[in-house]
Length: 143
Image (cartoon, rainbow, N blue to C red; front, side, top):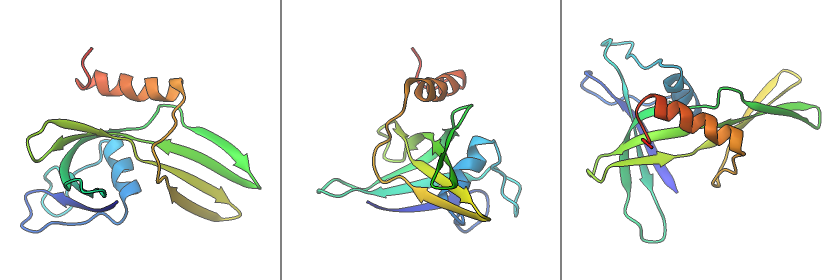
């Protein structure tokens, strides 16, 4: 699945995040103002799905991380799991969509490596409940 990610704001041209992980991390922390115009940047993502499915574009409404991230040691490196819950508004007026990208960050011996998860995440109940609770607090996923 190929994709394109960009910001829109009051500036006349699109800007592009340096990387998707940092863009979602900043959004999850409420950091979304454009340095040039001061307006709130809106993160957009275009998904090009395979198997004959149409491309989908969405505006990211919000991004959430669990309040307590899970970490462990592997072969002398410290690994932290970053599962995001991303709430999106489809631009084709078909409503909201929810995207669950994730990364593993490996740190050790002065190195830091981001590994993007290419498959649907397997989330243990406490992580998933934390994400859903945060989204509900902001009005998404009403019961």
